[in-house]
Image 1 (cartoon, helix red, strand yellow):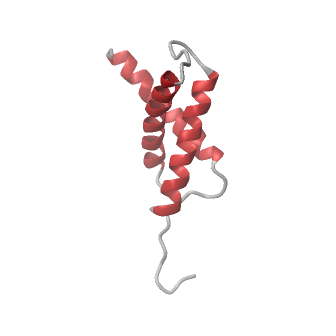
Image 2 (cartoon, rainbow, N blue to C red):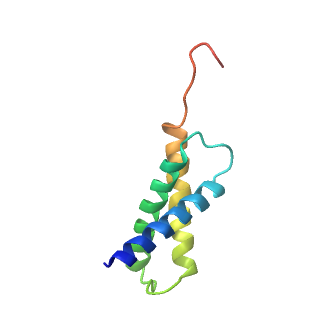
Image 3 (cartoon, rainbow, N blue to C red):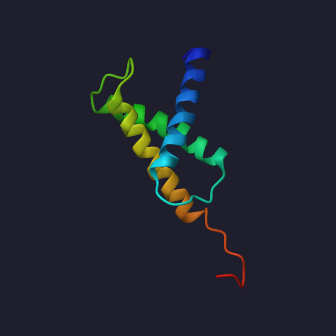
Length: 92
């Protein structure tokens, strides 16, 4: 993979993370940098899953993008549901 390919993958991952956060309803109490990291991982895993399913990933594929956004939304929901909750003692 070339440097431009890595930069492109990072940019796509950042966009996928932002879209994944928008898909999840409610407020997520996780930092934006964590959302973007989840997006990068979801973009990579989504591409791997799309290739394994036989989807052509050489250009833009709407189906691949939907898989990536779905994985990002799942990742954001899991992280926000587990690590994102911070309760102050004595406050309900």
